[in-house]
Length: 301
Picture 1 (cartoon, rainbow, N blue to C red):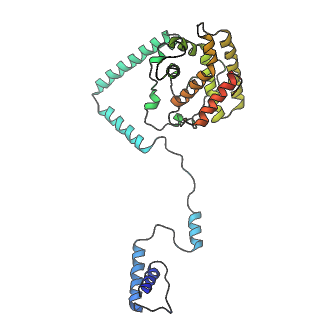
Picture 2 (cartoon, rainbow, N blue to C red):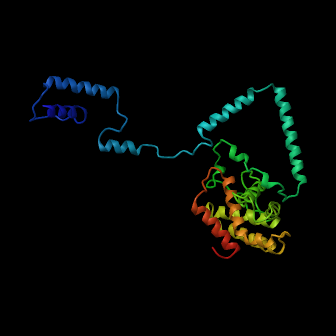
Picture 3 (tube, helix red, strand yellow):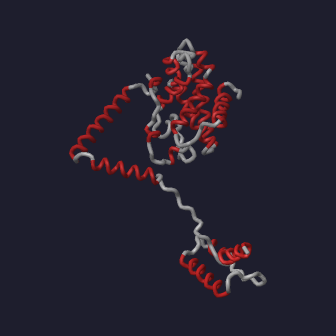
């Protein structure tokens, strides 16, 4: 009896089958009433899936708009946070106060610019004490330029190397490399910090560093053989200049010997800070940088 009742439930809810030789536990009148009730419920609460014949289902699928829409410039949550921040700034203080604050901010920016202009172009004094926290990393907006895969490279500059992208300070990267050379236990380095800083911020090594960064970028994300050839030629020229005009130091030999390692760390930390929304902490990416720098400088992988 239980078997027949289960069959009736299946017939009513899944397939409109009419039993012929089975024992009818419910009369035909009651069955018809149950069918009408179930049908009425289905009409009032239609299923979310496509129903009908195979031809009808295929037709509905064919009519679905399959075009993909471009993603928004920012994520919904982050856009909401930006709107809240804008409202807070708008409601904070009177118009006169806001104008005064803006004037003070512009004066501070101008004075900072003048101070930077007074410094040497390649001076990175005190870089070891810096904590490389670029303003880009603090941003909450989803910017495609923070992804190496989506970054758009500007035109090649034949007169000088291109700067690091997204406003990352080169001297901050110098500080990262100097700290990485210190022993975690003793805190000692193979040479004096100021000597390493002077070497890394020298014009020739700075040019090698930046052009190597962009060469790796194009090799992995935007292959351009002609542009990469120009970058490599300039790297070779500056490497020759570096060998003949290495900054005078008691550590000249040690610095040249460790140049592949120093450049590998320099390029890696630059990628991590310039593109904080990309993932570079992989053996494959690190090995690629180390092998390339070693092949260029020492001639072996």
